[in-house]
Image (tube, rainbow, N blue to C red; front, side, top):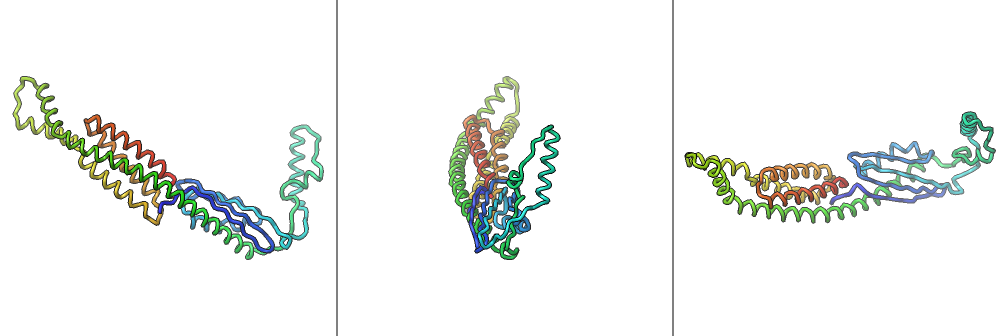
Length: 291
């Protein structure tokens, strides 16, 4: 099943002391990028969070946001962080000097600044670790389900474009077969008109025409292109990530179409080549978001 790199997962989990809200947002990326936004009391779990997210999400830019609310059983007395208070006061003093201002913050203003007032928490690390990891795994599961849903939508669009490409390839093949005999006669007439009254060995003439016709032959490219399309369709049922493999195969298909376009001297075929290349580009844009 195809899986998109775009997804969202959210979970809420709590015990008798604390409630934790976890959000995961995933965007496409060539590699795994982890952007954690953890509250201070959970920073010691950043490595474990990265391990769990990478194991479940594999690739993409994953943003983890965590909010917590201490319940009455998990929070005791309030206290002032004097170190943090002094740091804020020093910053305000330096700023006032720089601006030539004698304005000062009131004590009430300082108390509103982040982390000046802290609480003593009666929560041990093993409990909070177990709670957080359980909630994170739930969020990862929900994110993966959204990724699968988005992946199915991408599959429907890509399959439609692949069918369009197959149809136009068949048209190219029929046109080329019909044009082969015409091409031989055209080259013969063109060479004869150029040589005019100059005598040339007939066998040599046909040999040169055959060489020119062979240079315009696109049979091998059409066979390889059809093989690539058939292989590409099998990736829809893979359980492993296939985004990078799909992207590589699309590059190969684009090369085949470039070769067909450079070889053919049939304007109708050239127009179909342009259409197919446009569809390949649209598929490539979709594949950039596939895991």
